[in-house]
Length: 587
Image (cartoon, rainbow, N blue to C red; front, side):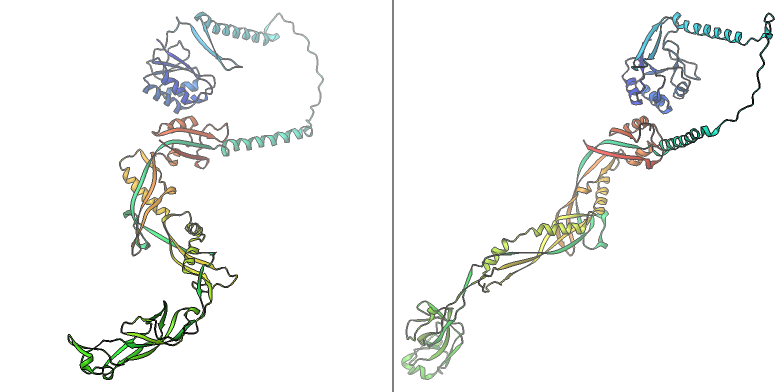
């Protein structure tokens, strides 16, 4: 019957053997191990071979006369044959799998070249194959004959004449000189202790394994609207209400600027004007008594120069000012309108609207206009005392330009300082960063004189505020919502909540210490595997076995086992000596 013969190399591991079985073309597969096949000295590996062969619909036969391998093969119900031509049998089972015809076929013998390690296959006839045992038996019989002859004594052969034995001189037994071997004994003891210490270290303390598991994960966008409260007692993470904290810091920045404003700090001209009441005047009755008031601040103009009254003036109109009522008065509607027969006058103090010598004028009786329609100026005294003194000042425009030119790197400084105050345990809400109350001052102040050689300075103080939420609270909320989304899928788990890159978008103040926003992150989901699961499948097992078991988990793409030393072939039973690294790669 046709079969595939697989010669196992000493460096092959169990995954290589399983792959060769899967790729075999024939239904019957013969495994021919070398003299030292460490990978097959494991009952688990034989069971893996049986499982793989069953799935691939193959019949596996072990070709070996090694008793230990035969026993291990028996535990996995794998038939064993001593040669490629003999019938295989499962230990303690009667039915055998037909593997080849016994005596009519040539014997195939395989041996490894001592120098190159390559296998040499020699085909011999049955007679040549059977000649070797007969030659071995003959050689053994020959040796037995020689030994029997050598053991004969003179007493066993009557023809041998007993010869006289020479007498030996008795000598006294010598006591060994132990001092001669003292150094060798000490060196041997030290070497033995050192060897024992090394073996204990190498077999007990040194073994350690690093297991690197690579798997594929799927990124999932997370965006959930939440509320924030400044009252910790009101926090309810399960309902999407998270406690938010705020911190503030005041920073100041300053600079210099040039003053461009100016003001005349001279004196204003002063004087008086005489005014009279303009006709006609309306009276409510025939008493013809009336009072006209000119308020303080009334303007009077002379040739375009404005003067302002510094006091109020009251002008009384009497019957005498009306004169002959029948001639000067007439009834208009319900009142009496009269042209005054004599002037009703008053003198008012005025001051120039601005400083300057140009406001100095001599006395005059004409050229004035009044800002009060009820009166007109009849004359004025001389306007005197006006002087000019123009000085540089800080104007409001200077203040605006100076504030705009300030170095506002304090914004970043304030943000960095507040970030450090919160630390790595918080998710900073960047959109809540606020420069609230501010205070701007200049020296000299606005509208104050800037002396010669003085450079004005501006100082701006700003209070910055920012909010942050505890990272643990955010991660707990992300985990809750993500797990609810994966409800019912036992093969998946969250491998990364994305908390390191999580942020709050659209932070808004709803008033009364309540805010709203949306938590955003990228969550990575993947196969259900963790350090605990890897440990459970690894402790105390052979490296090849561990690699096969973990790689069989759906979603695991690669498994690497890195022993601490070349002689370490198994994962220690001590979890403290096993380092596990799980790497996730996005699909």
